[in-house]
Image 1 (cartoon, helix red, strand yellow):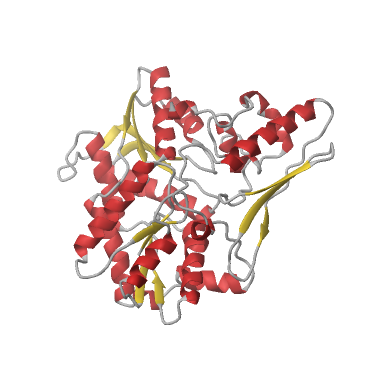
Image 2: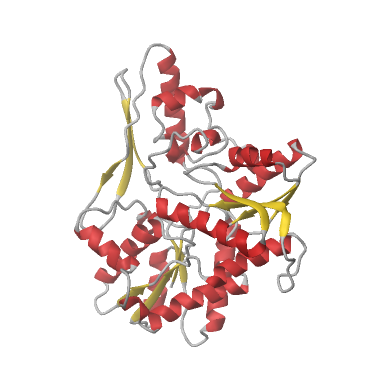
Length: 403
């Protein structure tokens, strides 16, 4: 069972299916299914159902995640644990994230050489005249962000770039646009922008949009965009390695597994799971735009800023979470305003709270450019006031990177 995140982008959905197809070819005698946490069908619950209906009594579940952030650490194991509890006699063993395996690093380097028109089997001695910019996903998990930076250093030393650095498309800093602007000052005339992503999706298209925009504004610099990993054969090898670890019992020795860590933290009351709607919401409801919640949430936010201009203050509280014994975690936003009314919306999609949300080179640089409205609830009223000129009152409009 391959467990993915899911995307509103149908192309990403199809590409994830290619990984399952590739793994099926490696294990022709085993049933292989896949599912997503959100947005996409089938969800993880449906994939597990399919395996059980085929008579399976033991399931090897591997996260289709590059690094172990909130989804791999909390959300997927919570879905798996809940499912296992409801099916006596079923055993689910949860494997490791893909991580920085040699196979993953070599797949990434092959994509970079490919974008440069070079043969990965006969690479040049160095690329000193070229700068590499690796684009990481960017999360509220410090360790996952650090792994992306580590990848950049490894690839840089392996391939011999003149300089290399990391930018991020998600909640951390530096963001892609402002990061590229800073790095261009180093004076390189050829810059490779390489997204370390498995599949396409809205973030990949946003990254491509940023690079296109910067390239148009700087015609003297040659910007080269590297394709994402997709179903590169070495990526399939990396998935197969994780399955082998489960089969050979290697997860039972050494360091704490993702599942053991989850259960320990859950028992200690340390886990705050956001993504459970994949079990409870119709997965066919996969709109290409923002959700009804996002639309209303942003409209309320802008209206509140308008009120603030007329002597009212805006207070944005952190997310409230409700829990029950079924592990179904509803997510609600409560935005209380001093003029006497509040908005409380149930919302299936969420992001972990990030303490550097206000960093001058972080997500605030993407306000008004299609950044997920879920982030907006983490910005303080001071930040929103400072960035108010970027907010046009409607986050349903397509960001320039998606046009």
